[in-house]
Every structure is written in C-alpha cells, then in structure tokens.
Image (cartoon, helix red, strand yellow):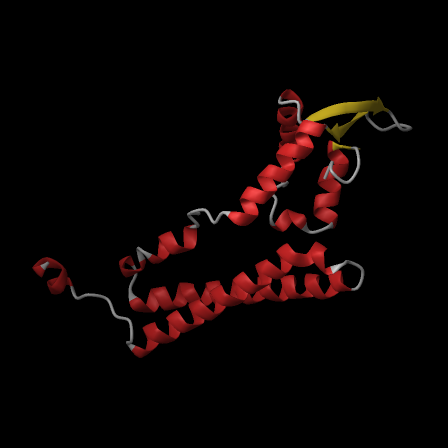
Length: 180
C-alpha cells in the first residue's frame, strides 16, 4: 500500500477493508498491521515520513516505502506470481480422512459446505459486479480468482456428494481393512 502513497498503519487497514482485500490479507487484528509495519521499519524497507495529530485523534505516524523496500516488493511480487508453491489447505486434509465418517454423515456435512460455498460465491460475485462499476479490471483480479476457485470447489463438492449418494464412491468394509 505504501507503493501508492505514504500513509499511517490505520489508513492501510482501512483501505484493505474498503477494497475488500481482507479476503486475501488477514487484517482482522489491527495490531497485525502495526507489527508488519514495525518489521518493515526494522528491516529498512519503510521509513517514517512524519508524525501528526489531527484534532482529538491519537498521534499517527506516516510511513513511506524506501528504495530498498520498493526493490524487495518487486522481487517478492515477481516470485509470488511466477512460482507455484505447495500450500496445505484444511479441506483436502479433511477429505483424506473422509472414511472416518459414515456415508450419510459425510454427505450431510458436505452439503453444509456446498451451501456455505454458494453463499460465499454469491458474495464474491456481487463484489466483482460492484467493483466493475468503479474499478479498473486490474484491481479485481484477485477477487475474480477467488470467484473461480470457489466455483470450482463448489462444483467438486456437489459432484462428490452425488458420487457418494449414488455409490460411485464407497468406503471399504471393515473386513477389507483387516485383509490389507
């Protein structure tokens, strides 16, 4: 955010939320933004531009990106965009233990997930449509990405439920487990 303009940590948190970037950046705790800024300051990637107090508000320190900080930002961004990394999301891990539930219970909880995914997908689609009214498409790319990922996951969960219901996917019988 400091590549846009100098600002204080509270403003960064506000902008992240206003732009719905809190879907991809965890700023639920205001302190996490301040801690991040302090690490960047310690590492020489940002510097203090000034400190000011407006009316009855607390004193706020404004930060700006250093030349080194800008170079690190560009290097980090290039690496993050170019290099796929192994991530370990919870859902595939939970799927690997699916046989611990009975088929009916698995279907039930997966239907709950599908319902929640539909809700999230509707919300993200609405954000994309609203964003298109005032943002250039480049500022929506991560939201469109999330929309596509949610749509694919929803499709997968619905297909898995159908396969479980139809018997296409079954659990091994206890006797089969003992034989192996």
